[in-house]
Amino acid sequence: MQLAQNRYTIQGVDVLEIAEEFGLPLYVYDADKIIEKIGVLRSSFSGAPDRGVNLKIKYAAKALTNLSILKLMRMQGIDIEVVSVNEARLALLAGFEPAQIMFTPSGNAFAEIQEAIGMGLKLNVDSIPLLQQIGEVYGGSVAVGLRINPHITEGGNVKIQTGHVDSKFGISVLQRADIQDVVKQYGMTVIGLHVHTGSDFKNADAFLKGANVLFELASDFPDLQFLDFGSGFKVAYKEGDHFTDVADLGAKVSAAFQAFCAGYGRELELCFEPGKFLVSESGHLLVNVNVVKQNPNRTFVQVDSGLNHLIRPMMYDAWHDIVNVSNPAGDHQRYNVVGYICETDTFATDRDLPEVRPNDVLAFKNAGAYGFSMASNYNSRPRPAEVLVYDGKPYLIRQRETFDDILRGQVNLSVLNEAATVAGE
Ligand SMILES: *Cc1c(COP(=O)(O)O)cnc(C)c1O
Image (tube, rainbow, N blue to C red; front, side):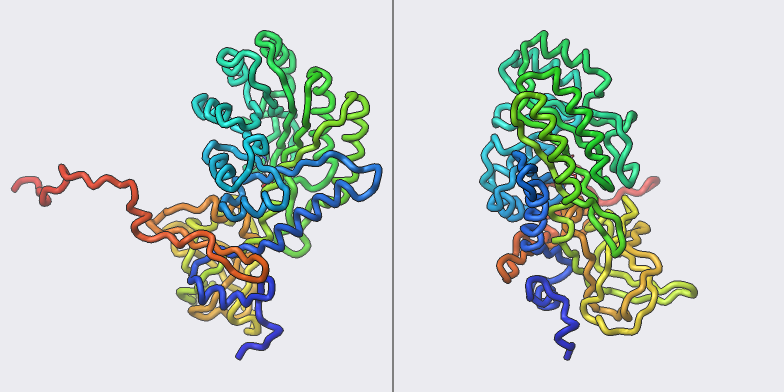
């Protein structure tokens, strides 16, 4: 019997029981954690009476696109930001109105942009050629937002920096005159300015730099309804990690925004598009230990998952805390925790864990954002099931894939049915 205080729980539900009921590997999300994060963000922007701004939080759906998560966001009064029309379709299925959906393409085909316009989504245009094309086809009839590249280098990892001078994202702030030319030529209405300078900003100053670029540019556009500061909220992945102090951010950005609105002459919406901040901590990836293998200088823990289910450690060198859920009181040792994929898919190197035994259940923390949504069928492996713990109860929110899912869409060509022909026979 395990001691009660050692049980690893989500909203009081024993994680081992969830693993038992739904099988492994498994993504589990804690709805309370998401609600808590929304509350933290909201209160940061409305703490003091002089700070009250018209804040719109738009959840960046790509972080975790399960319908039930989108529905939870909607229930909490959150709007949504999408990067593809399919994400917008999911948002509509989750009950969002088109006007609550902000579409931020980056180099998408014009056909997809037209679909988005047809659906009535809000649109952030990310290039001058696209702006031109919209002008040609729709004249001034489609109100647009503009995604601006402010040329600021911020963010932890070069792969997730999106605002620097060589980044593909957005319209360069240096092309201000060209934007004006196109807008004037077609009589277009620009209703918003957007900047998303990457992930993992450390402090409010980084956001303020981006904000100042938009404040400055705003004087070109008399019809603005919103300024959107994107995201980049850094979350702590391990103890001692630096994370964005949202209270400080809220205070500083709100003050700067109010000063801006006073100068602009109107109260605009202040938008943020957090993905990771809202869902990262809510998620765990639960895995089973297949093999514990002692090599001369390393002990490998091989689990029934890999870069096909959680690619962040391999792609971004991301750290995910690991909990040995089924042996929390074991003697500590150091392990390399690795996946079962035929690639080097290392989750953790030289990680200190309570003794890991075959069939132990491990939990990777902070797996809510860019976990399932970046999962694949590599090695012809099904993707895991997903469970949402809501109001103290675990609910299945996505079935585990099966071999049928792997096979779906493949065409079994009959012209290739001949028996093997060997050269020379
Ligand atoms: C990915 C993305 C976000 C969310 O980024 P996080 O780091 O997950 O908060 C917000 N806005 C846009 C346009 C994005 O592409």
